[in-house]
Length: 311
Image 1: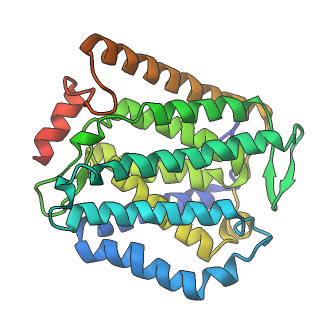
Image 2: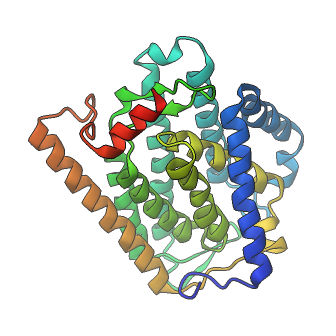
């Protein structure tokens, strides 16, 4: 992919596409069946936690999966997936307004973890690149740029009070105010974060993983992006924790380690989130809305379509 990656061969692309569709398929299993979600995000990780992950992810292991950040990320993603399952299937839970605080809070926490990591990588001072916990990193202004983009992404989380459960058999958690502009801004920020902080893993953990939740949000089940994101992120992290050698030894896709690539992806993330925050501020000001309570995009076609097809 030129500026970003050194993709070894066509086989790598083929396996990458297989992984993409596998994530989407398991997401559909967890989404469309009540017991599928419980098995995937409770019983499977419980078994792995007790019998597999302590062996495959010891502190200081050669794949960098034994750090506090990876473990926290794993369980915060699983907490999101299980929490959303409960909102969908525990009778009456979605009607409690305080419960609806959980989706934005777990999302904000997930973003904040990554923002802290971006700033931490900058603090390492690896201006020419280097290894920390067996992960190659390069510090630079892109870490600060993307950290700011992540903060803006948190600030622009809105409309949580409008979350509802779809009326079809899958009972999806629908967040109509989370329209395409926020999703794209998030995707650009998150890809830049992964590229900055685990560059040589980002082909899988960034590009393919983001596609695995964005494609369903646009073409399979609109309005359920956060549900898709929590599920596919959990699935990928469980796989990486179980087979940590995959991205480093079995089928690596190294980044180019080009400072221009780091700068460009973080600049795009920052500009997109500045644009989103500016647009959102204008709507809030003109319509005299309370961003902590009110839905902001109720007049948009995207919002209205999501409500219509899920009600």
